[in-house]
Each structure stands twice: as C-alpha cells, then as structure tokens.
Image (cartoon, rainbow, N blue to C red):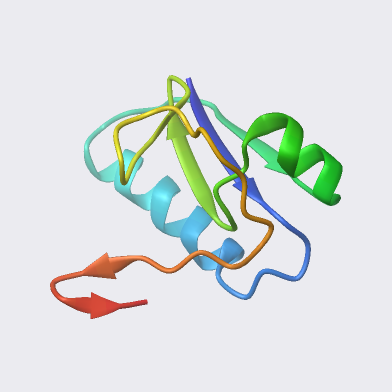
Length: 85
C-alpha cells in the first residue's frame, strides 16, 4: 500500500505526488496511491505525521524505512545527492 500524506498549502506536495506517479509508471507499477490530506495538528499527532509531503509504503517512511514514531506539522526537507530540497 502506498500512501501520500500532505497538508494544504504545502508548496511541494503537488510536484512530489506527480514525481511519485511518474516513478511508478517508469518501473511499470500501476498501484493505487492513497492520498491523505492532514489538515489539523490533532490528526498529525494521531497518525505520527512526519511532515509534508510524506510517502509511506506499507506504513513505512520511504526515507527512514521505519514506521513514523513522532509527528511534525511542518514542511519536510529531503536530501538528494547532497542537496537539500
């Protein structure tokens, strides 16, 4: 199961979702992506929301390989090839 979590107004959510869809298509995977809007801090606490945007595969964060254990109701920063984005 693939989940895409974001909060409204996240400047990177739309592009990240498009990148995810394109990556899946490129490797020939036609899986449903469950898109979840996390619009309130209470929801973020309940689901241990790591920040926006987040991609979970079978409940595990794609960057840590673990289930989220804490919440952050903030924009998420990723590092690729030594560059923060």
